[in-house]
Length: 121
Image (cartoon, rainbow, N blue to C red; front, side, top):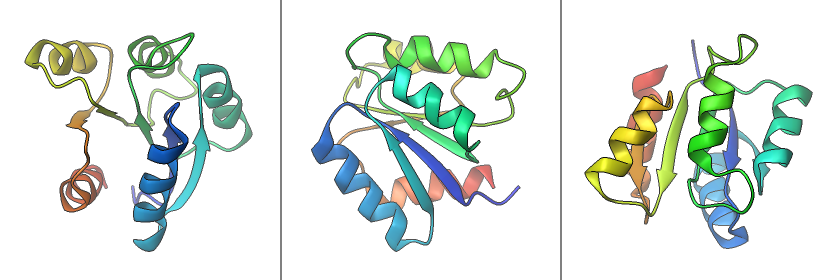
């Protein structure tokens, strides 16, 4: 499956802008959400090919949201890459246990992110 549409979930407007710019320059169609509620709304409006998920957000955190998405039959086929400042090995393991397919630590290296996206295609 070629990845074209990406849902970017992060509560930082700066991070959303930076990541969206990086991805759109590479030809991806990017939609953004600033929290779990908004992310679920975006998912139902237009199912993405990939979700890039922050962990630390108000309300429902990225681990909880990833678990909800990956265990929902409607969205279980949409891969999630955790994209977070949480850089401990235990954080990475927990993210993968929640259903994430990969894990990348901020600040994001653009080439590393693109490589991880292409590896899922």
